[in-house]
Length: 489
Image (cartoon, rainbow, N blue to C red; front, side, top):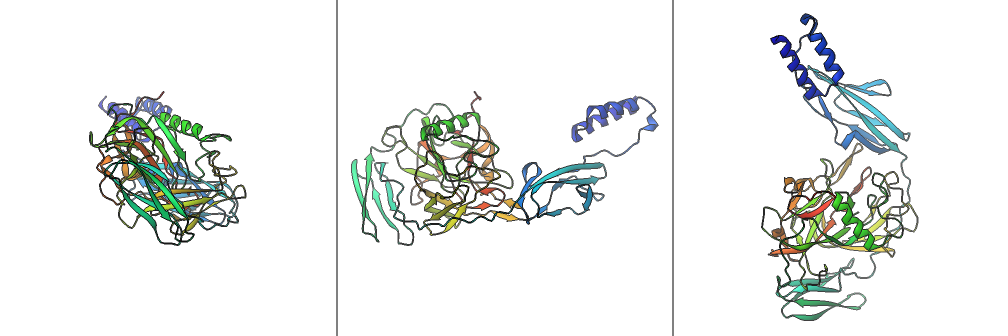
């Protein structure tokens, strides 16, 4: 009886660790109830566990490219072996396999790994597309000077930097100190054309005058602006489908974004600078708990797409985000990996199904690639975004993405950014990124000392792209105060 009990215990352990089917267990039990000597004895332990850098073991390359498949395997021992199989033939016995082809299609490679306890198998899918011979559109010069705002509200006692952005010229700016309440004007002169631009600064009562209750719902209750930069996941992404149909207005897009958040559905901000602005139904206090804000993204071990976070107070009490913004300083603030006062302009291509060119305030240029497999839309320009160019203002993080042997790697930064693996922790609202209002800084990097915030803005912070993943584009599923996540509707 003791021997039979021990064998039953062994079978249940195998079921838990290895995931064997119930039929297999039942047959073993029948044998165990018979002649005990017919059951072979062997040492018990876990089988090899195979995982891949890319989620679900799916890879994508173009014809002529080479991809090196390198699995991450646990529970190896000195007896372990590897067997790679392709189209029924054994093609390798190393701990990696190099695949290449000049024919488009979908290919499957199998891997079997053994250890002293048995064998595990897995399969990877490799999608091979025709190498693009795309003629990239010409990138214009940045053109006339540009400004992020021409009127703004600032609390009395603060200062703000008024700046115009140009390419290839000295900085055009002036620092204004909000000493006296009222309407004030600052004038900047274009050093090339001598054209002048007036900026209106409304100096409001001191910070805290229009502070609201500290209590309210955890999730943001209003999306004021949704202005994504061009990107293949914004609208028409093959996995999600069309979120913003032709004729969609900006107001409808904002309502759709809020509905996505309530269900924890993805919202893409597109390439560098793309952003959304949301607000709370109350003033979110600073320092009540360990963290004040939480943002859910979808970072992976091989792909973080960090977004810079900004916060603002309702300085003039009108309930709108038309006030001074403060960046939440992350781990890279003040280092060579971070640029402030940055601008990037995207140019709508004349030809459909084309890459989108960009030029920035450093006079660097690049492209948002057209990813026909992932998003076959005619243009990566949204229905509510008019004109032939768009300019975004903010800060930028250094692109550290790499692409080797068909595998992309977009590493995270240490902390302080949305959709960044370095910020992922288990907190009051679940596993997501958590942030502190106390990290807010003024335009010159000094602590902003905000006691609360009313609005939040998130912007994609990198310009990079890789051939199989496309542009780096921050994705957001939820924005809220650091409280338990509300029940789904």
